[in-house]
Length: 132
Image (cartoon, rainbow, N blue to C red; front, side, top):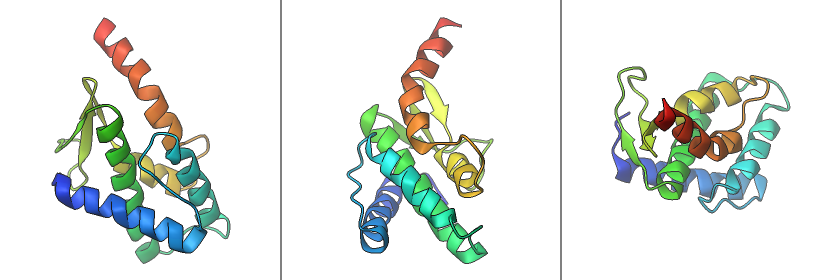
């Protein structure tokens, strides 16, 4: 998957549509909407791990949506990064973030992983990095 912003924006839109259809919840590309998406992820995993095809679909949609929220909230951009071949990263506030890596960890059911926390923490991470 490339860091093509048009494609990734379209994937984020598919996430909005699928969450609305399957879960009756509204996503609006705001940082606050990631709390709703965290709840959707918990619902997805309530019956156990996702099958491979379903996992791949949700990984793409959630990664793109989370990255698109960062791009919009912090005037960021989609970038390629050598540590995540095949999955674009986002660059915002002088920091590189990996929304697809985070989506994989959330969908794996890793404790204490949160899409909303990632976006809320980004300014503090950027501030700390700038101070180094």
